[in-house]
Figure 1 (cartoon, rainbow, N blue to C red):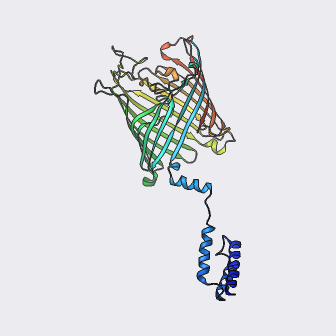
Figure 2 (cartoon, one colour):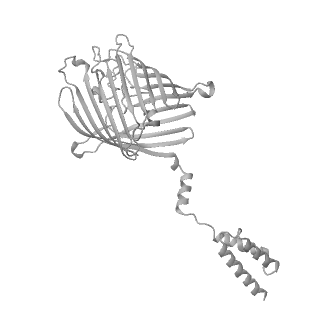
Figure 3 (tube, rainbow, N blue to C red):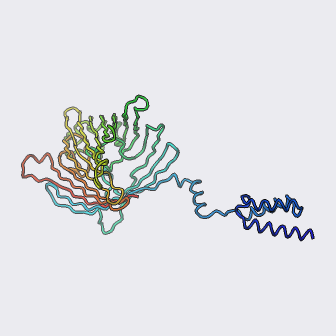
Length: 427
């Protein structure tokens, strides 16, 4: 009879458990019944505890695929690695001031990884098309009977932030200097060396509503085994930035760039074509550049303008002069920008600038490769219109109208032009 009572009690307990799982301990009614059975001596407390442990094991939740993926992500480097890149398809029409017209189709592809190594240290590696030693071009012209296109190292760098307001980078990486346009530096150029960028807020410590900026760098231009006079670039930029209410933001910089050992260098990467050359066809002048640059952003339309005209307006300028003996030549640019680079459908951006570069004002290997054929000795206009097609995809029209200064002042002299139509996609 006692055995029958226990069997009956166990049956009741099992029924209670399976009806109440997974809320066995939260079910007050079940607990009361169990206590009553123990009090009547039908089943012991130890038997109840043993049965609960056995049921807990069998009803333990099995993790699903999402749980496993989440655990793996947290336990690995998956959340520390970012894959990024972009693709550009271009049709380019060139009408030089003299010579043959050119119409060509070009592509650019860049892809790489950015890795968070530690809380304040990251690194990156990027590959890009191009296949040449030209620092100003990662374009690849289509043709060659469907021939394959080369892919080369575009960036390899480490970036360390010892404190919140300071960044130190080394390797081969994007231009670390402030440059409001591409007057002096083509956007494809990747600097090689080491640099620091400081943006120190003065408000917290001194009560001044401004940021103090300081950019410095030492960059390798070439490694010549034949002598010790390797060309280097030493840079320092000091700047100040602030906001005037909610409507205006501005930045202004004064910079000094010393291209050491450029004069007379026998590096095959520095050969003057428009600038003055010595008897050996080497650079005749040194290049010690004083630069003044800055921009002013107006947010008025963002506050009161109707869509799609609720965009920021930025006015920017850049002036540089070569202080080397006998040169005293300058380069300058003025421009305006409406909007930001498109991120989604119906976003837009418009940029216009006028620029002028004298001979010997800057080393010929670095300014925008499309303006004046990439050589200092011209002046002209650039107009860019960008239109968002969908998320991270945009259409862009870029038009250059330029004239070589060496042509002269004859009104019959022709202006050259370049018209580029691009489809851009980033990922």
